Image (cartoon, rainbow, N blue to C red; front, side, top):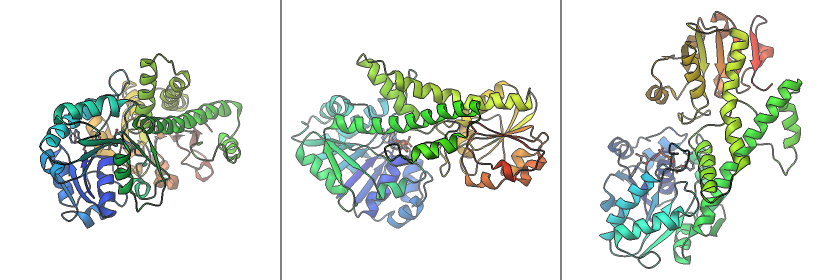
Length: 431
Ligand code: NAD
């Protein structure tokens, strides 16, 4: 089939490359000319394992990019909306980018003969596809949904860092459509993937995505709260959760306590569901607590810092890990951000290291020292905070010797204190 993908970020560029790999003809649309050029050169606009290989393989063959909506719509049967849906200043979903994309798409559809399908892949709160996207498309195209064009909602469940693998090996594909014909055509795009397609309504599809993310975020905050309690009782929370996770009804995943969740999805999606609930007069106290625990968790790293290193004004503190998790360069809502900001407020001289995400953090925080290795960041530091679960941090040992005051506070259970010299003070966040 001929597919156009609006937005070439994490979801859009991975979906585009994977649809190309599945044999479809794909056109990426982005307003960012730099990304358009990169895709046409076979270079992925974001880092994801395996994405470069797919882009190189399909670029200028069945994968091209443009900023021209008219060209993309004329030359495709289906358009996927993959633009961002960030939080606004109140934490509610900001649909302005989706709105702009719908306007451009609708105007391009106005010039096209024949049936076109619009699929919302961006994460949007229930009712958005039918009550915001569909009317905008009708307004700007002058056409009628269900008759002249189809509308569907197809949430994406990929994990950053494993995005290509997840797209090609999904554990579920959900297609919510306004009519049978549209749903069947969208499901057909995924025919070669070994996974059943759940066919439903757009609003149920939208809700499935939020419940999925909110449940995972709840598991993490729950585990962090249990970790905090266990630590104060002198109990190893990892031992507790290993046994608890053996219960098949619970599962072993997402039970590791630590500095909390970040990323572009969990925090904003839980907040968006909270916002939507309040809009319909329901106060979601459990979801509010999930966020509250997550906000407090990284700040506990600073309490431990004060306990072991005292006043850090004018002193070097090393922060290892900037990405919100390993295997990605994404720093959005990374738990290292509130930690670095607080360290700067305390007057610390902050030295950071991340194998992949430093460039992105440089755009957000300037007045810290970006180092090329953990060893460089640790040199002369009075304490070290481990914020991301990069594998290379597991191997650290001799590097701590260059610290001025050997305090290691571990937010991700990366360092085994058994392997450390006796003069190093080690404390885990919840263990
Ligand atoms: P992103 O910010 O990385 O990418 C969005 C892209 O859209 C950017 O390249 C931007 O230039 C482009 N864009 C903005 N306005 C545009 C317009 N009017 N026309 C064309 N392009 C435009 O976002 P993302 O992380 O890929 O997320 C996209 C959506 O997918 C969000 O709703 C997100 O919640 C959801 N999602 C993300 C993930 C993830 O892991 N990142 C996973 C599942 C779902």
